[in-house]
Every structure is written in C-alpha cells, then in structure tokens.
Image (cartoon, rainbow, N blue to C red; front, top):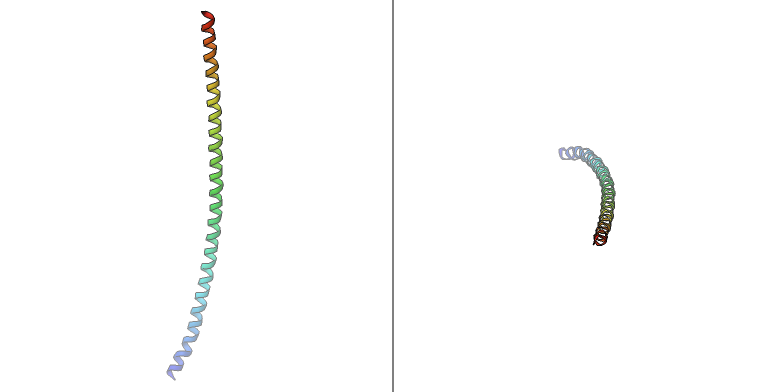
Length: 90
C-alpha cells in the first residue's frame, strides 16, 4: 500500500512539473519569436543605412568628379589663354 500512495503522490507532482515546463517552453518560444522579429528589424535598418551610406558615397564621388572636371577645364582654358597672350606678344 505504501507503494500505491507513493505513485499516487507522484502523479500530481509530475503533472505540475509538466505544466511548469510547458509554461516555460511557451515563454521561451515567445521570447525567441520576439528576438527574431527584433533581429529582422535591425537587419532591415542596417540595410537602409548601408544603402544611404552608399548613396552618399556615390553622390560625393560624382560631385568630386564634376569638380575635378571643372577644374581641369578651367586650367586648360587658362593654359590656352596664356599661350594665346604669349603668341600675340611675339
């Protein structure tokens, strides 16, 4: 009879432990889902920032190329103007 009472006392404890484990598992599942969502949002934000940085770099490079082209054009015009002045003086 003592064996029976031991078994009957164990059953409610096992059910209680199973319930606690199920609740913990559900809680961990929700936490993982929340973290996964957060990671996806962070990945999207990183992608937007990278695109923004690439666009800034591209526009900056294009701006520098235009400036360099303009400077070269001005320098070339000045060179020919000075050459023409020198030729007229001769």
